Image 1 (tube, rainbow, N blue to C red):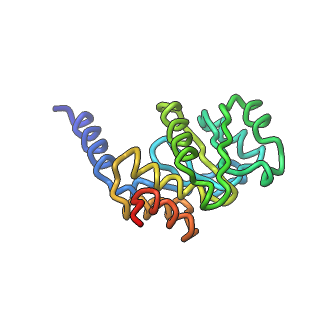
Image 2: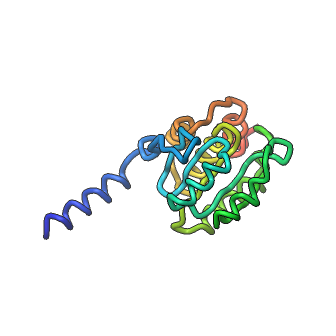
Length: 174
């Protein structure tokens, strides 16, 4: 077997066997949006500025999923994203209680629909986006719950209330 083929196989095996918290890498930046964390083709961040959306598009992001509610918005993000050729979706998640089964299913579906395309999932600070990432790892990638929440915290999850709500939905015991 050629050395280049062996190296590629080793790289692939190493990436697949890494713990989810270790697979969350970064931070990377898009213009003034710093601290962006990455898991495979999913980028987790706080609120991007119009300049950050342009930079994200220039760096290959295809889709933006915004978890902020309408009342949190400070500019017309949908129009800006679309003007840069980005598919744009808003799934409002109002704090911990906004993580309803319907919202989570919609978020998972949007990421699945993006296929191999790069997806930026954001909220105001990365807290809700990090919470979503933990749920995604558990539900869509069969990752151990503790490893998934460690990855979510690395990506920005800080709210104990969000984590508790998501854990309760994953294991709804009385």
